[in-house]
Length: 464
Image 1 (tube, rainbow, N blue to C red):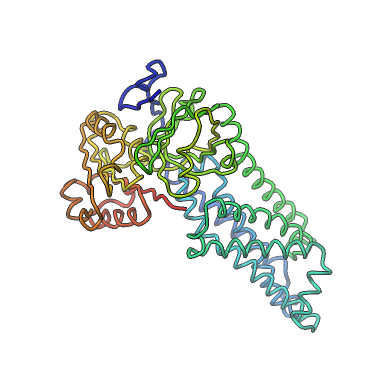
Image 2: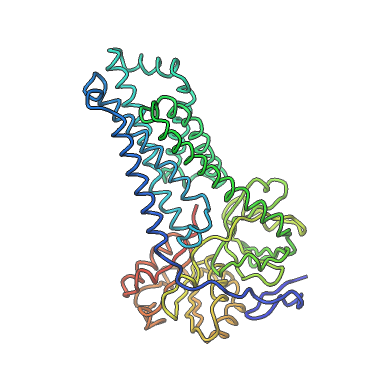
C-alpha cells in the first residue's frame, strides 16, 4: 500500500479518510507575550536581589569574611533564580510556546545557560573564602570542613560538579562531537543537580534563615516549576500519545538517504498543527524507544494520517528506514513558530536547502488559494529534489512559482542578485528559510541586505 499526499485531497489510496486540517488560528499572534515573559522575569530578578540585600546588615558585611560571604550569598540567589528561568524556558508551557516559539525560547535558554553555572561556582568560591577569613584558617582546610560537617553540603557539592559537567558539554567544540542522546542525557543531570543543591540553600542561606516568608515563596516557586515540567514535558506527551494511538503504516525511501514515514492514528486532526511545525518523535521499538528526536512534518495531516520525512544524519535517523509497519509511535508537540501565523505580508518567499524542504512543503500546503508564493528549493543533486510533483501541484494551486536550483554551492549560488531576480518584490514579502545553520544564516543575511523587514524574516535551522 502506498499513501499519497496531494495539494487538496485526502490520501490517494484511502479516499474516505478526510481532508487537510482547516486553519482556525489567527495570523500575527500577539508578540507582546514575549515582552511580558521578559518583564515578569525582570521583576523576579529585582525581587531576588532586593531580598538578598535586605537580609544582611552593614556590620555583618564589615566583619571578617563578611563581604565574601555576602557576595557568595548574592551569587547563589541570582544563580539559582537564573537556573529556574533556564528550566522554565524549555518547559513547553503551551501559552508561551505557542506565541513566542520554541526556537526563540531555546535561543534564550542557550544564552542564559552559562550564567547560573558561573554564578554558582562563584558562590562556592566566595563562601569558602568567607568562612576561611572568619575562622582564620586556610581555604583548602575550610573547604573540606564545610563539605564534611555542614548539613547537605556534600550533596550540594556533587550537584555543583554535575552543573559544571553540563556546562563543559555546552562548549561548541565539545557539543558538536556529542550524539544527541548523550547531549540529552547530560541535560537530565541538570535537574538532578538543582534538586541536590536546593536543600542546603534553604537550610543555610542567610536570605532564608530567619525569613520564613522568603523560604515559603522560594519553595512554592520551585514546586510550581517542577509541576510545570511534570505536566507539560511528561504528562501531556504521554496522554497525547496514548490517545492518538499512532502506528507506522508505511516506510518509503525517497532516495538513497531520505526516508518518509507515514503514521496512522486516531483523529489526528485535533492536534490543530500548522504547516512548518515539528514534533519530537519516539518510536517504541527495540533500541529506539528511549530516544526522542525532532522532525518536521512533510505534509499536513489527512484524516488519520500524518507524515514525516527524515535524512540520514546519524545512527538514529539512518535506522528509521528499517522501521517495521505496526511500530507504535509517541509524539511531543506540535512545536515551532515557522508558520504562516507569524506572516506580516500577504505574500511570501519560501527558501529551502536540502532536507529543509520538508518543513517548507507543509508550510506551502497551509497557504490559502491565490496566495502567489515563490518557492525556491536548493539541492546538490537531482535525486535530492524530493516532493517535486507535490510542490509543483501545491504551488500551481496557489498561483505561485517553483524554482529548483541544482548543483554545488559554487556552481549554483543563491546571492542577493539571483534572489532579487527570482523575486523582484522580495522587500514586500515575508521570507521563510529552512535548512542547515550555515544555509539559513546566509539567506537571512541576504534578506536583510535586500531590505526585508526584520519581523518578516522567519527561519528554522536543522541542528543539535
